[in-house]
Image (cartoon, rainbow, N blue to C red; front, side, top):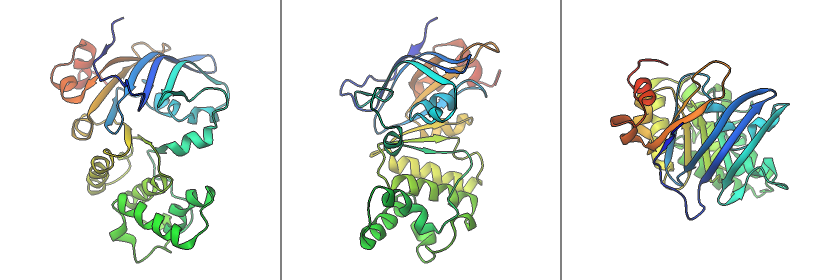
Amino acid sequence: MTVYCDAPKNPSNKGFHVEGFDFWYGDFHALTGITLDIAPNKVTSFIGPSGCGKSTFLRCMNRMNDLIEGTREQGTMLLEGSDIYGEGVDPVDLRRRVGMIFQQPNPFPKSIYDNVAFGPKLQGVTSKSDLDDIVEESLKRANLWKEVSNQLGKNGLALSGGQQQRLCIARVLAVQPDVLLMDEPCSAIDPTSVQKVEDLMAELAPTVTIVIVTHSMQQAARVSNYMAFFLQEHAGEPAKLIEYGDTSEVFNSPRDSRTESYITGRFG
Protein backbone atom coordinates (compact mmCIF):
# COMPACT_ATOMS: atom_id res chain seq x y z
CA MET A 1 0.00 0.00 0.00
CA THR A 2 1.33 3.44 -0.91
CA VAL A 3 1.45 5.96 1.93
CA TYR A 4 1.70 9.56 0.79
CA CYS A 5 4.03 11.30 3.22
CA ASP A 6 5.25 14.67 1.99
CA ALA A 7 5.94 16.39 5.31
CA PRO A 8 9.57 17.51 5.77
CA LYS A 9 12.15 15.19 7.27
CA ASN A 10 14.08 16.11 10.40
CA PRO A 11 17.75 15.78 9.48
CA SER A 12 18.72 17.79 12.56
CA ASN A 13 17.10 15.11 14.79
CA LYS A 14 14.72 17.68 16.24
CA GLY A 15 11.07 16.77 16.71
CA PHE A 16 9.83 13.18 16.37
CA HIS A 17 11.02 10.59 13.89
CA VAL A 18 8.76 7.51 13.66
CA GLU A 19 9.45 4.53 11.42
CA GLY A 20 7.62 1.22 11.04
CA PHE A 21 5.74 1.69 14.30
CA ASP A 22 3.15 -0.90 15.40
CA PHE A 23 1.10 -1.01 18.59
CA TRP A 24 -1.05 -3.63 20.33
CA TYR A 25 -3.65 -3.61 23.10
CA GLY A 26 -3.20 -7.20 24.24
CA ASP A 27 -4.01 -9.31 21.18
CA PHE A 28 -5.59 -6.42 19.29
CA HIS A 29 -3.27 -4.94 16.68
CA ALA A 30 -4.25 -1.26 16.85
CA LEU A 31 -1.64 0.48 14.64
CA THR A 32 0.61 -0.79 11.90
CA GLY A 33 3.51 0.57 9.89
CA ILE A 34 3.30 4.19 11.04
CA THR A 35 6.16 6.20 9.52
CA LEU A 36 6.36 10.00 9.75
CA ASP A 37 8.39 12.91 11.06
CA ILE A 38 6.78 15.52 13.31
CA ALA A 39 8.26 18.91 12.45
CA PRO A 40 9.60 20.82 15.47
CA ASN A 41 7.96 24.10 16.51
CA LYS A 42 5.02 23.59 14.18
CA VAL A 43 1.42 22.43 14.68
CA THR A 44 0.58 18.99 13.31
CA SER A 45 -3.01 17.72 13.29
CA PHE A 46 -4.15 14.08 13.27
CA ILE A 47 -7.48 13.55 11.51
CA GLY A 48 -9.61 10.52 10.69
CA PRO A 49 -12.84 8.77 11.72
CA SER A 50 -13.47 7.65 15.29
CA GLY A 51 -11.53 4.52 16.18
CA CYS A 52 -8.80 5.01 13.59
CA GLY A 53 -5.90 5.16 16.05
CA LYS A 54 -5.30 8.91 16.29
CA SER A 55 -5.48 9.14 20.07
CA THR A 56 -3.72 5.80 20.49
CA PHE A 57 -0.77 7.04 18.46
CA LEU A 58 -0.79 10.38 20.30
CA ARG A 59 -0.52 8.55 23.63
CA CYS A 60 2.32 6.46 22.24
CA MET A 61 4.28 9.68 21.83
CA ASN A 62 4.64 10.15 25.59
CA ARG A 63 4.11 6.54 26.63
CA MET A 64 0.76 7.15 28.31
CA ASN A 65 -0.28 3.75 26.99
CA ASP A 66 2.30 2.18 29.32
CA LEU A 67 -0.31 2.69 32.04
CA ILE A 68 -2.60 0.16 30.32
CA GLU A 69 -1.78 -3.46 31.12
CA GLY A 70 -0.90 -5.71 28.19
CA THR A 71 0.10 -3.06 25.66
CA ARG A 72 3.23 -3.40 23.54
CA GLU A 73 4.90 -1.62 20.66
CA GLN A 74 7.34 -2.39 17.87
CA GLY A 75 9.35 -0.10 15.62
CA THR A 76 11.19 3.17 15.98
CA MET A 77 10.03 6.31 17.78
CA LEU A 78 12.76 8.89 18.33
CA LEU A 79 12.54 12.28 20.02
CA GLU A 80 15.50 14.51 19.17
CA GLY A 81 17.36 11.41 18.04
CA SER A 82 16.77 9.30 21.16
CA ASP A 83 14.51 6.23 21.37
CA ILE A 84 11.72 7.08 23.82
CA TYR A 85 11.09 3.35 24.31
CA GLY A 86 14.78 2.63 24.84
CA GLU A 87 16.24 0.96 27.89
CA GLY A 88 16.67 3.33 30.81
CA VAL A 89 14.20 5.95 29.60
CA ASP A 90 12.16 7.32 32.51
CA PRO A 91 8.52 7.64 31.34
CA VAL A 92 7.83 10.26 34.02
CA ASP A 93 10.63 12.49 32.72
CA LEU A 94 9.45 11.84 29.16
CA ARG A 95 5.97 13.06 30.10
CA ARG A 96 7.48 16.26 31.45
CA ARG A 97 9.15 16.84 28.09
CA VAL A 98 6.07 15.70 26.15
CA GLY A 99 3.02 17.09 27.95
CA MET A 100 -0.58 16.02 27.34
CA ILE A 101 -3.83 17.98 27.27
CA PHE A 102 -6.94 15.80 27.35
CA GLN A 103 -10.41 16.13 25.83
CA GLN A 104 -12.02 16.89 29.19
CA PRO A 105 -10.29 19.56 31.30
CA ASN A 106 -8.80 17.90 34.37
CA PRO A 107 -7.57 20.51 36.85
CA PHE A 108 -6.57 19.25 40.27
CA PRO A 109 -8.99 20.03 43.15
CA LYS A 110 -6.56 22.72 44.26
CA SER A 111 -6.18 26.45 43.88
CA ILE A 112 -5.26 27.95 40.52
CA TYR A 113 -1.83 28.75 41.95
CA ASP A 114 -1.24 25.24 43.27
CA ASN A 115 -2.37 23.67 39.99
CA VAL A 116 0.33 25.54 38.07
CA ALA A 117 3.00 25.24 40.78
CA PHE A 118 2.43 21.48 41.18
CA GLY A 119 4.95 20.33 38.57
CA PRO A 120 7.74 22.77 39.47
CA LYS A 121 7.40 21.77 43.13
CA LEU A 122 7.81 18.11 42.16
CA GLN A 123 10.96 19.12 40.29
CA GLY A 124 12.38 20.65 43.44
CA VAL A 125 11.51 24.34 43.10
CA THR A 126 10.96 25.60 46.64
CA SER A 127 11.53 29.35 46.43
CA LYS A 128 8.25 31.24 46.78
CA SER A 129 9.46 34.02 44.49
CA ASP A 130 10.55 31.49 41.85
CA LEU A 131 7.19 29.72 42.06
CA ASP A 132 5.37 33.04 41.83
CA ASP A 133 7.30 33.88 38.65
CA ILE A 134 6.62 30.45 37.12
CA VAL A 135 2.90 30.63 37.89
CA GLU A 136 2.56 34.13 36.44
CA GLU A 137 4.58 33.35 33.31
CA SER A 138 2.74 30.07 32.69
CA LEU A 139 -0.68 31.66 33.08
CA LYS A 140 0.37 34.47 30.75
CA ARG A 141 1.55 31.96 28.13
CA ALA A 142 -1.80 30.18 28.46
CA ASN A 143 -3.68 33.49 27.97
CA LEU A 144 -5.32 33.14 31.37
CA TRP A 145 -3.41 35.56 33.60
CA LYS A 146 -5.61 38.61 32.98
CA GLU A 147 -8.71 36.62 33.92
CA VAL A 148 -7.43 35.05 37.15
CA SER A 149 -4.51 37.17 38.41
CA ASN A 150 -6.55 38.54 41.32
CA GLN A 151 -8.00 35.15 42.34
CA LEU A 152 -5.09 32.71 42.34
CA GLY A 153 -6.40 31.14 45.54
CA LYS A 154 -9.66 30.15 43.83
CA ASN A 155 -10.26 26.44 43.28
CA GLY A 156 -9.39 25.50 39.70
CA LEU A 157 -12.57 23.43 39.48
CA ALA A 158 -14.63 26.61 39.95
CA LEU A 159 -13.46 28.05 36.64
CA SER A 160 -15.46 27.75 33.43
CA GLY A 161 -14.74 24.81 31.14
CA GLY A 162 -12.66 26.89 28.76
CA GLN A 163 -10.71 28.46 31.61
CA GLN A 164 -10.11 25.03 33.11
CA GLN A 165 -8.64 23.84 29.83
CA ARG A 166 -6.30 26.81 29.67
CA LEU A 167 -5.37 26.21 33.32
CA CYS A 168 -4.40 22.65 32.37
CA ILE A 169 -2.29 24.06 29.54
CA ALA A 170 -0.61 26.46 31.98
CA ARG A 171 0.07 23.53 34.33
CA VAL A 172 1.84 21.66 31.52
CA LEU A 173 3.75 24.77 30.39
CA ALA A 174 5.04 25.32 33.93
CA VAL A 175 7.45 22.38 33.52
CA GLN A 176 8.74 23.73 30.17
CA PRO A 177 7.85 20.87 27.80
CA ASP A 178 9.40 20.49 24.37
CA VAL A 179 6.21 18.98 22.93
CA LEU A 180 2.52 19.55 23.70
CA LEU A 181 0.08 16.77 22.76
CA MET A 182 -3.57 17.83 22.61
CA ASP A 183 -6.29 15.18 22.35
CA GLU A 184 -9.41 16.96 21.05
CA PRO A 185 -8.79 19.85 23.46
CA CYS A 186 -11.72 21.93 22.19
CA SER A 187 -14.49 19.35 21.96
CA ALA A 188 -15.83 19.98 25.48
CA ILE A 189 -15.60 23.78 25.66
CA ASP A 190 -17.64 26.72 24.36
CA PRO A 191 -16.95 28.44 21.00
CA THR A 192 -15.37 31.52 22.60
CA SER A 193 -12.95 29.35 24.51
CA VAL A 194 -12.22 27.32 21.36
CA GLN A 195 -11.01 30.53 19.70
CA LYS A 196 -8.79 31.31 22.69
CA VAL A 197 -7.24 27.83 22.68
CA GLU A 198 -6.63 28.00 18.93
CA ASP A 199 -5.02 31.43 19.29
CA LEU A 200 -2.89 30.00 22.08
CA MET A 201 -1.63 27.20 19.83
CA ALA A 202 -0.47 29.75 17.26
CA GLU A 203 1.33 31.74 19.94
CA LEU A 204 3.05 28.69 21.45
CA ALA A 205 4.13 26.98 18.22
CA PRO A 206 7.33 29.00 17.67
CA THR A 207 8.73 27.56 20.91
CA VAL A 208 6.78 24.31 21.48
CA THR A 209 6.05 21.46 19.06
CA ILE A 210 2.27 20.88 19.07
CA VAL A 211 0.36 17.79 17.93
CA ILE A 212 -3.43 17.92 18.03
CA VAL A 213 -6.08 15.25 17.46
CA THR A 214 -9.23 16.81 16.07
CA HIS A 215 -12.47 15.70 14.42
CA SER A 216 -13.01 19.20 13.05
CA MET A 217 -11.72 19.67 9.51
CA GLN A 218 -12.17 23.41 9.92
CA GLN A 219 -10.04 23.44 13.05
CA ALA A 220 -7.32 21.37 11.40
CA ALA A 221 -7.26 23.83 8.51
CA ARG A 222 -7.11 26.84 10.84
CA VAL A 223 -4.44 25.74 13.30
CA SER A 224 -2.09 23.19 11.72
CA ASN A 225 0.91 23.43 9.46
CA TYR A 226 0.88 19.69 8.71
CA MET A 227 -1.85 17.08 8.68
CA ALA A 228 -1.83 13.29 9.05
CA PHE A 229 -4.84 11.21 7.99
CA PHE A 230 -5.34 7.89 9.81
CA LEU A 231 -7.79 5.19 8.79
CA GLN A 232 -8.96 1.76 9.90
CA GLU A 233 -10.44 0.44 6.68
CA HIS A 234 -12.07 -2.70 8.09
CA ALA A 235 -13.22 -3.62 11.60
CA GLY A 236 -10.65 -5.66 13.46
CA GLU A 237 -7.77 -4.52 11.26
CA PRO A 238 -5.02 -2.21 12.52
CA ALA A 239 -5.24 1.47 11.65
CA LYS A 240 -2.78 2.94 9.15
CA LEU A 241 -1.38 6.30 8.20
CA ILE A 242 -2.84 7.04 4.77
CA GLU A 243 -1.49 10.49 3.96
CA TYR A 244 0.68 13.11 5.63
CA GLY A 245 1.78 16.49 4.37
CA ASP A 246 1.33 20.25 4.31
CA THR A 247 -2.18 20.99 5.57
CA SER A 248 -3.22 23.18 2.65
CA GLU A 249 -1.95 20.62 0.14
CA VAL A 250 -3.73 17.72 1.83
CA PHE A 251 -6.95 19.73 1.91
CA ASN A 252 -6.78 21.17 -1.58
CA SER A 253 -5.13 18.36 -3.52
CA PRO A 254 -5.10 15.10 -1.54
CA ARG A 255 -3.07 12.40 -3.24
CA ASP A 256 -5.11 9.46 -1.94
CA SER A 257 -8.77 8.99 -2.86
CA ARG A 258 -9.57 7.87 0.70
CA THR A 259 -8.26 11.15 2.08
CA GLU A 260 -10.38 13.09 -0.39
CA SER A 261 -13.47 11.04 0.52
CA TYR A 262 -12.99 11.74 4.23
CA ILE A 263 -12.27 15.45 3.84
CA THR A 264 -15.31 15.94 1.59
CA GLY A 265 -17.56 14.13 4.06
CA ARG A 266 -18.33 10.97 2.10
CA PHE A 267 -17.60 8.92 5.21
CA GLY A 268 -16.50 9.37 8.82
